[in-house]
Length: 344
Image 1 (cartoon, rainbow, N blue to C red):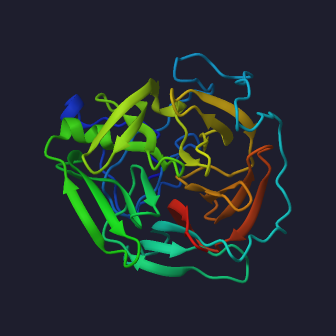
Image 2: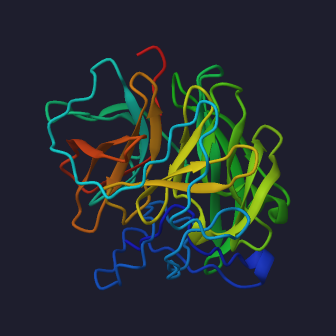
Image 3: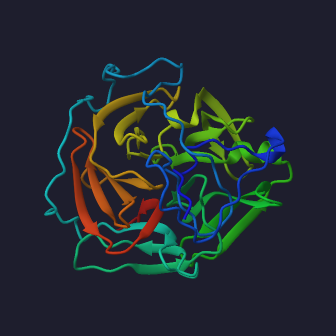
């Protein structure tokens, strides 16, 4: 399967750049690819992206390198503590009262029929529990709204050798996982701006933020999004795709954190989109992944799917970046769009 990090790589979109988007062959895996070509695998065959450029340094929204730099603590913010961490023993078991859910977008040897939202196992004693099959993969940013009880995000399709054909906003009813609304955007030039590398909802305000593509398809801006009206308001950037976090999540008190392609835990300023590196993690990153916040203990939960066909659920400490593998999925499975089921 062609691999690409969730929206983190260059989109050469035909409508905007007059260039075809390379097609994604369903169920194709190139075993001889360079490790640097860390591409997200999708079995849906919708949209393929270019290999990740070799840009080792991270930058904030103003284009200034943040390597070795940390923002001063602000009210309610965790103190950044940069250090190299070791993988924690696979011994911690996530509280049974926390139900972690996500969308399965790929399974090795699968037919595509297994795609859907699942309650994830968080110990060796548990199994995947299907919540509902889904007609569309949310590949370009999405969020769970516990008040509306929906999961909403963007998907895209291609035609004629990989040219962008459509961008749609899909919303699922989280009670049945049936499509509640599906809006195909008429203007592709505006549609590309609703595709994101990472999106999260702020529980303290209900506002949705993320790193959204600009009109070139090669950079992203930090923006506040209105999915109902298919608009977003830029607040910071642009920065290149390789500089943006691959996945983000927000705490109950409105603090945004993410994981970048180097496996670093980062903090994102809500007002400006400024990115600050906080700590290294041991999260294995080779394919696209999802993250969410467990507000019961203030940790980040993340999935991972790697070159050796392993996958699992991890816990990341937001102070130190310490990474604990909670469960091995014992299969080549890719899970995106994580959230914690409310009331659990």
